[in-house]
Image (cartoon, rainbow, N blue to C red; front, top):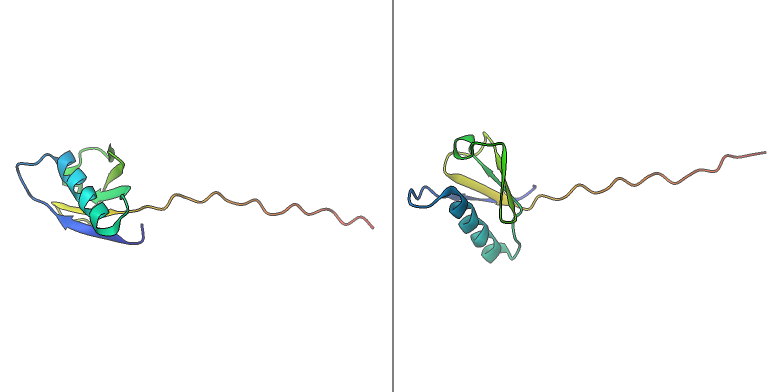
Length: 90
């Protein structure tokens, strides 16, 4: 992810999944694109990774507690094989 948006949400009445969904909906309304990745502080996510809707949520120590860093992660492009070279027979 090259560019993202950080949202703060410490609403104690909302479940974690609801917070991620709300943040993703806001991202989509602002940028017209559905985010596919969200980074959160490890204290918010007990497992290394969780999928909520279309968003893969991952832990990151660089994100502050109660913050959600959303964006679009580019999928790896397949590697192109170099063109075949024909041997020079002289």
